[in-house]
Length: 512
Image 1: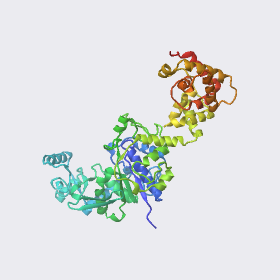
Image 2: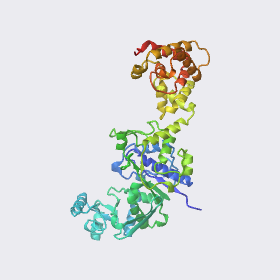
Image 3: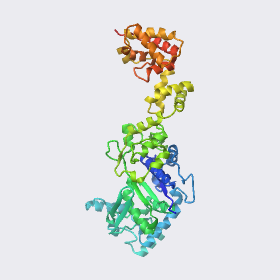
């Protein structure tokens, strides 16, 4: 029997979950479900200095909104838990000490001042990237340079220290990435990363390797920003003797600014007026806020579909997929290597498609709810008619009420620019006649009838209907643009339509 596929999404609770992180979660989820495997959520909270209260709940709520449900998580534990790294703290030191014992790691006692002095020396010597590595470690205070007795004394007396990995000086590190193919890095380009910090907490590099091993992770699907760290992780698997169970790696392409120039950030969203986070965020400590897709009216399914296509495509022309269809179509081989431009217009397009595919009965609930917020009562039947009228002009659910509100509130103002151009004698003649016609009409007043009667009114005055249509719209909607005018008449009915037209005739000055 083949090994069960197990993937994990491992965000840090240091702030709101960026759209790039949500895409990583989605790809992990799609891959796991496609392969009949498990999707795990692990909270990597080892960086206590950057921990932000509320960020973990934000991660949970964001994924719940999108329907990305974990098979194992802090809220759905299994035998591989706990699922917060801070709760696994006691287990990491033994693995770091195991590496020290094997000669693949060492104690470093350097103070922050000594580390800064080292960087300054290297900078002065025109070293482009000053780092603690196989060369510079020979000049620092660590268990490789200090006498063994002094090291023991320092440890016994409680001197602060970190544990660093001992990178080989001359070794080629190879990684076969599922998206990028073979990646080769020479060890001379790597530095001796800290594995255990002086506060006893592990760094990401140690904790994620240990946890992935203990949790049986078979595939690590993560952002491109982790690609430079991948050679170190490959070495750690080798140092631990876990090469046979090392997961396959897949590093996802970056999400780029709309112009393609650099990685997408919150600042880009703020500047260009679109969200880069799934749901609204507020940092209670700092008051910092960030807009979310959910609150701006993006539908869950539309956002998921949009997100899936940011770097992946199914290889066919089709663009609309349900979550189940995405699972069936997904493959890592169809993920591109290069970065993907973020296109908010495409996100809006997806939202329009999903919104317009809903039944009028479903859309009516948006209109009714928004109307209630303004103290306006709209019946289900009225709302369904309004939905049918306005859904072709809507991008977000809130647009339905904004586009149809004029149907349910008394008309008390008019577009002045349109009135100044179109409210002339011909318009007054036709509309005066139309008021009489529809006020006395007792048949079925539908869109077809409304148009026919309007034509009769115009013809009786010897005026071409096209010349006054914008004025007709103005008289019943107050605007020069909007949904199908004859359908508007049908929804208003003869009495309300006549009332509005008469109000316009009594109110608007006629242009010469």
